[in-house]
Structure formats: structure tokens, C-alpha cells
Image 1 (cartoon, rainbow, N blue to C red):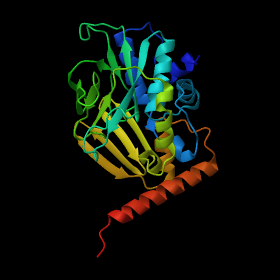
Image 2 (cartoon, rainbow, N blue to C red):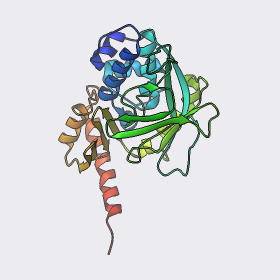
Image 3 (cartoon, rainbow, N blue to C red):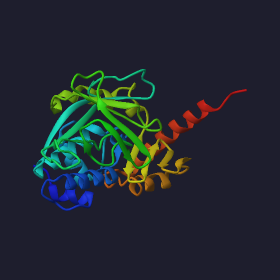
Image 4 (spheres, one colour):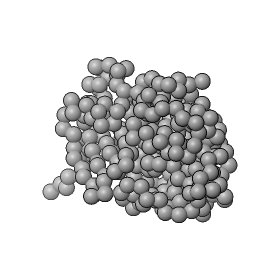
Length: 288
């Protein structure tokens, strides 16, 4: 069992009977209020793919996480509210990849069933609050373009996963695309990849502290000390120059709960992130 009341309070929504409209409300609130982040990795906090653990961290600590935590916590909440929600193995293709990576388990996908509407006669919805600058609202699991804020996605049958699906992001998005399987998955299917993503020196999650928040107008993305704001009018970037502003941004703009982070942890984390940023900046400066 999870603390549904605390979770809904974090989202700023009331409990309603399952419906497509209520699902959309929950999805929007989750994308806007619960940050996609690797923050706990950089604090040295160990996490798992257990959806109940994720729900506790979201509802009580005020934290977020990445796909296993966000979609995992969301699935636990939806289940408690009476929704028919299912897990699927997914695989996110980064921009550097030559092509789709297949459903390698680096992403957890949700589908929600039994909610037919005129827009979605089959009643099957693709719900995903764990893609950073991905979906703001759930969409019918059917082929076609998806217009949401400044992004145009495309959902189509996967060419690498039989009976599966592929979400292609806009060219300006944070990833190229994501394929997922039709078959249901369980938490154990993601455990090994979660360990790799959260501990391997080769993992981008380990190398760079990232915080992202999706909203109706676009997305706010913090990588290290660089804040990127994406809206319909374009992309703006700036660097955060001091620790006070950085911590205030984590708590304010991104809504991270920080009550359990000690002063020593704050100092150490800021020093590491700043040093990484300065080293990266120096590497981008041409030498004579």
C-alpha cells in the first residue's frame, strides 16, 4: 500500500474515479511537479526499481527520479486508484546512436487499459512521465503525430520490436526515440540495467547531474550548471553561477524536496558539480 493522500497532495490533485480525463490530469501534474532527475545518484543515495519505494520517495521526501522511479511510482498510484496499468520494457535511443536500440530495458513504459473514449475507442493509453522532455499528457496507443507544446512526436509500430511501438521525438528533443515491447514486464526485468545506469562510470546518469521538468509550454532542463528552457519561441540557455541560486532552483523551479540533504552534502555536491562544469567548459575552449 502507498500513501495515496500524500502522493495526490504532492501532485496537487484530488482522487477521482478512473477515467481518461482523470488520467490526463494525473499525468500532467506528475510531469509538471515531479522532476526527472539523477539527483539521488549524485548524493550517493541507493535506490531500487521497487514501485512502492519510489512512491514513498516521491510522496514523502518530495523527490523525483528517472523512468523506473517516476513511471514506477505513477503505476503504484494508478493501481491504488483503480486503473488497469501495465509495465513494458523500453529502450531509449540517444542522438548519438546510429539507430533504434530495441527494448533493452533502459526505460520503463506504462500503458493504461479500459478507458475508451471517442478519441481512443480501444481504451488503451500510452502514459509516460519518465522521459524528461517527453509526453506532457497520455495519448491513445495508435499511430500518428502528437502535438504537445513545442514538440511534435510520432507514435508508430516499431521496426525492431515485433508487435511493439516506437515514439520518435522532435529533432530538438532530448532523445531520438524510444521503442517498447507489447508484452508485459515486471520490476525484476529492469534491475540489472538500473544498477548499470546508477553506478557505472560509463553511465550518463553518473557523469552528469540532470534535472528536467515538463510543462504545457515546453520544458526546463538543468544539466550540471547549465539551464535550458524550451518553449514555442525557441531555446534559451544560461549557466548558474553560484550555489545559492543553484540550490534555490532545485527547490523552486524543479520542486525537489531537500529537507534530508545535510549542509555538508550540499557543499560537497555543489563543489563536485561546479568542478565538472568548469572542466567541461575548459575542454570546449580552443587552445592556441
